Image (cartoon, rainbow over all chains, first blue to last red; front, side, top):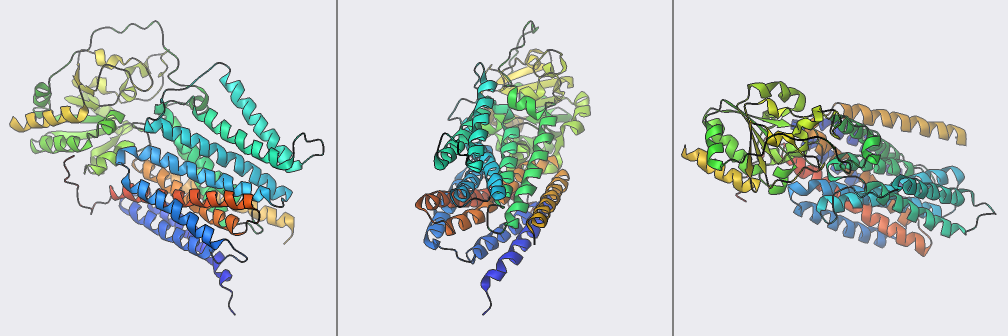
Amino acid sequence: MFDLSYLIDPVYIATIIIFIIGLQRMSHPLTARSGIIWAGAAMLLATLVTFLTPALSNFALIALGIVIGGGFGYIAAKRVAMTDMPQMVAIYNGMGGGAAAGVAAVHLLGPVHFVTGSLAIVGGLIGAVSFSGSLVAFLKLQGWMRPRPVTFTGQQIVNMAVLALAVISGILVLFQPSWSPIPYTTALWLFFLLSLAFGILMALPIGGADMPVVISMFNAFTGLAVGLDGFSFATPNYAMVIAGIIVGAAGSLLTVLMARAMNRSVRNILFGAFGATEETGVQIQGSMKSVEPDDVAVMLAYADKVIIVPGYGMAVAQAQQKVKELMDQLENRGVLVKFGIHPVAGRMPGHMNVLLAEAGISYDHLFDRDEINPEFQSTDVVLVIGANDVVNPAAHREGSPLFGMPILDVEQAKNVIVLKRGQGRGFAGIENDLFYRDNTRMLYGDAKVSLGTVVQAVKKL
Amino acid sequence: MSDISMFWTAVCIVVLAAFTGYVVISRVPVILHTPLMSGSNFIHGIILIGAMVALGLAITVEQQVIGFLAVILGAANVTGGYVITERILQMFDPGRKRPGKEA
């Protein structure tokens, strides 16, 4: 009789091909959605065919686990608001890392071959780090933990010591030397506990604004862990290996690209504890001048060209719908409206684009930093909505912690209006002298409420 | 196949996969970085099939408990990653209905 398990490998190969085509299709906005649908179908097929694996048992437990995990994942992902996407990506990524650590642990609890065992150790370490690190990222982004960097003296030494101990216990697991002070399973548990601890320690000193980079990095970690785990079976599971390594490589590239957008190295982001240091000796001249919504409406309505620069504050205030209304009103009056998007605005790369797209603003209105920067000089009004560090001219001043970060040069416009909740600082905790410039006016209050008032005022003009 | 040729096959596959990931991603525009991260988050959800096999072949109670947890986590990764990516990409779909909701 035809053995159904012969289906497994061809289906896995097809899955990989479809994954790659899916990612490929994601490189254009018009085809992107079909890409994920194809990938989803392939994943479903791969999952179903896995039930045909020879000698598989515990079917009920497997099905139960899929129902519990899948049910949770589905409901939570359907319910979450668009603005909370970054932390959801973080938490699901962490779960993938946890699963990878689990698969490695199951392998290491059985009879271990040296080569597959060492791959499982590395995969388990990376997976566990990604799991606990992503959880910390999630807690920080969700606001259940203070997003400021957590630092203490000797932090890097402690972190390195924990990592070293994790590696040592991993070596004990692998070689099981006769002189080992602890039995095999104790070493194994110790290995995983230390790996989890290292993940937490790694994420603690990273501030909220650097989270996009870190989530992307943990994403790459999980991919790598999954790839290595693919080897911990009697015959390597190349679907896992290839998919995992692709994600690992893609995630690493994305991490580097994002770090570059902030003009910082990944190393600096991980160990710099950005925002914990304070620039001294710089006196800011001038004062913050506030403005009323009616005046803003007049300035906008009679302008020729307006550039809107959104930041995380817009996401927090859920103001994107009001931004769209304002854009429509202004365009009806013949005002040219563009959006200037900083690559690291928000808490996720492309975060602003997603939110604006959700509000119905088409992507041909959105411009990258390099595209929009030459245009500020010829702009009548720039509307900065809840962005701070990405428009801070301190980035041009040597000695500032922000020095060298490419910013949006909004201060070159004739008028700058900054929508801000209060007089506080940005995530980086650095005073923004843009707010003190002569051509800057501050519109305090909740961005959604302020914009609503402005829209009404524009309508009346 | 001998162990050593298996080893080099594995290395070859890993290297090619890494290049594929690099090439595919380097062409993606910045505006799609979020869905891309979310999409690759979904793709590493393939750990689910590894977790299924690990649990399916588990012998000791310890292995079964950990395998079960791994299946739960993996399944959450897959479904959550898919739904979120799909929701994000829906926003870019030019044919979709514009939300007229007043929050």
